[in-house]
Image (spheres, one colour):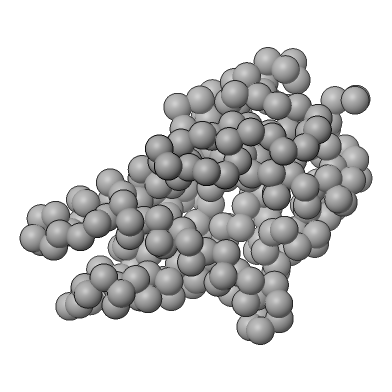
Length: 231
């Protein structure tokens, strides 16, 4: 396989540790207010609403809206489910933007710096990704993904528009992800693929994406390992 001209990175789970970050933010926000709940369960439930919310856009049931909108809607569902009331709009927005402040995995920032052309190919909207990247010291050559394509992965338009935006053919791009389904969708449009293991994305009970489930072009333990393979 010839080396790719650009690496396109999934972000949530692959580059940043959303579960631990959301859990810490929830504890820090509600703890001083004397509100006790299963915050890990809340974080996992919030993530569980992610795919159904995007599927409404993919199916055409609603027009494209930014992920910040979906995160806010799902937060309101969970606040009701967990019996939490009395938050004002500033509180709601602060909690919604927890997803702008996710911490990176320890290898992520250095691993990205060691690569060739790198772009975020995320379902996160651009404003979210800019703040998230500044928070985690992540340096990209471009932020692409859902908002550019007005669609959500694994819709093929997301991958194809990213390649187009970089002036490249899909075959010149490598999709990097900790999720087999993301890589499968990228491969289907002609991209090469790299699986990065994130066995703790969902915590100790994680049951998915614990191994590559296809013959991806590259398999690495982390982003620094990926840089070594592609050097």
